[in-house]
Each structure stands twice: as C-alpha cells, then as structure tokens.
Image (cartoon, rainbow, N blue to C red):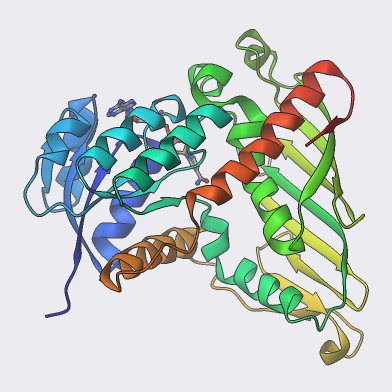
Length: 338
Ligand SMILES: NC(=O)c1ccc[n+]([C@@H]2O[C@H](COP(=O)([O-])OP(=O)(O)OC[C@H]3O[C@@H](n4cnc5c(N)ncnc54)[C@H](O)[C@@H]3O)[C@@H](O)[C@H]2O)c1
C-alpha cells in the first residue's frame, strides 16, 4: 500500500473545515488523523462528517496522537506563531494557513522554530497550486510572452467576515489577511520584487469594520524593482459573490486568470495568433477547491519524498513585508518603500 502522511487539522472553523473535508475525501497521500479546536463542539461536528477521526480540545493534545506526522494549522492568524512553535517542538511537519504570523518578527520566529526543529514549514498560498495560476506562471517564466510590465489583480470576497475576525489584531486586517495572496502572486508571477507601495482604504460599505480598525475595500499601487508597475484591488463584500481576477501584461503577450461570469484562464501570445486564447474549467467545482487539494498533496509528497516544500516560509515573509508596507501606506497616507 502507498505510504500516507498522517495529518491533524487544528482549527475547525471556516478554513479548517474546507481543508479537513478535502483532505479526507480527495488527498490519497494523506490520512486524516485528528481534528483539534478549542471549541470542541466544532471539532466534533466536523469529525462526525468525516468518518469520526479523533477529536481534541487543544493542539497539544493532537500533537500527542499516535501516527501523526504533520499538522495543518487553520486557526486564527494571531495564534499561528504559538501553534508553529508547538508543532515544531513536537517534530511535526507544518502546513500553515496564511499569514504565517501577523508581524515580521513573529514570522521570522516561526520560520526559525521550524528550522531549528528540522521540520518542514509550508505556507498556504494555495493560488500557486491552482491550475489556472500554474499555467499563467509557466507561460510567463517560459519567456514566450516577453517581459512582464504590468500586474493587475482583484480579490473581492462574497461577504464581509465577522468584525471579530476582521479585527487587525486577529486577522491582520485587509492588507495582511486578503492582500497577502495578491502580494505573493505579484512576486511569483512577475518574478520580481516589490520596491514601493502606495495604498488607500475605505470603509464606506461596511462601517462596522472601521470600529475594529479595518477597512472594507482598498487599492494598492505597486512599483517593482525592475521598473514594472501594478495594482491590487480588494473588497470584503460584493452583491454578486466572490470575484478573483489577475492579469499580467507583458511585452509579447498577456495572461488572465478569472473572467466574469465564470473563472477561467486565458492568454495571448504568438501561439494564440494575436487573439485571446481560453483555458477550459470545470464550472461545477468551487473556485480553488483543486488548489487546496493540490496544495495538501504537494505538502504530503514533499514529506513522502523527503524533500523541502515548494512554498516555504520565506515566501510568507516576503509577501507579509509588502502587506505591512501597504497597511502603513494606507494608514499614513504616503508611499512606503520596502
Ligand atoms: N487561504 C485562504 O484563502 C484562506 C481563507 C480564509 C481563511 N484563511 C486563514 O485560515 C485561518 C483560519 O481562518 P478561518 O476563517 O477558518 O477562521 P475561523 O474563525 O472561522 O476559525 C478559526 C477556528 O480556530 C479555532 N481556534 C482559534 N484559536 C485556536 C487555538 N489556539 N487552538 C485551537 N483552536 C483554535 C477557533 O475556535 C475556530 O473554530 C486564518 O489564518 C486565515 O487567514 C485562509
């Protein structure tokens, strides 16, 4: 029988539930060993759907479970550092939801804890595992589309999270919580570093978020080290559902990921005869379901093949640095260099 990685999921909230369901049903390299949540009832409910893996009221209890090789951390972002430290001390490999932590100091500390314990730490930038984004990146790095000159991305959530979640002390606020995916993509797709950001935020649509110190929509202008430019647009809610789109304009072609009304990839270049060529998608699958599944498979394969993970902690540090600069720019009202 193929060896499988024993994974425990900590956090049975919105994201932990998605991960646990996909791991249990669609990741052949993984065996779901247990689910832990301080809210034991949430953990029990989720386990009940998934063939009753063991349930724990704390990460420490989960870490003592037999046949546990690794943990997937999907608890509040403000709790990530302590969870990474505990898992590393227990010698378990770690797939940590983004952001690894809310500050650079804590992120560096988390990476250091994993390195000191010789365990893997993969950051949950799942868009890197999405087939549309993977094709876009392959087309860009092949050089066939020339030099990337403009990055443009948009991430609108369907509806705002509870104010208690949006609280920057818990989630990091819009720049760290949502923006970090876009800032990671900006680096990854452009194969470049962000040198300066200038950001604006607004809380006109959902003033309740402002009471916690967050905004409901924001734009960030980016200047890359190469001289290329970019923009990121974010919103905590729309009237029409989730909307995620990315474009890169390059000197000899372009890529698009995400088009209304259905998500699909597209590209233009010499091979597309100067027109816009479309990739096909399976519209019956929720957006990013494949990405979350492939992400967990990639993590398990790195463990099984005894090699480093593909999206290491350093990717989390680099994207967080941009997010924190954008947050500062938005709050202070001027461009911020990195
Ligand atoms: N990749 C993505 O697109 C994406 C999307 C949403 C959320 N996330 C990330 O997932 C993480 C969780 O977000 P969420 O939306 O599921 O939050 P949530 O509030 O819905 O769930 C968090 C769960 O963690 C539990 N918890 C909190 N602290 C704990 C601790 N110390 N030990 C054990 N359990 C604890 C809570 O009881 C809750 O059930 C966050 O880091 C967030 O940034 C990522």
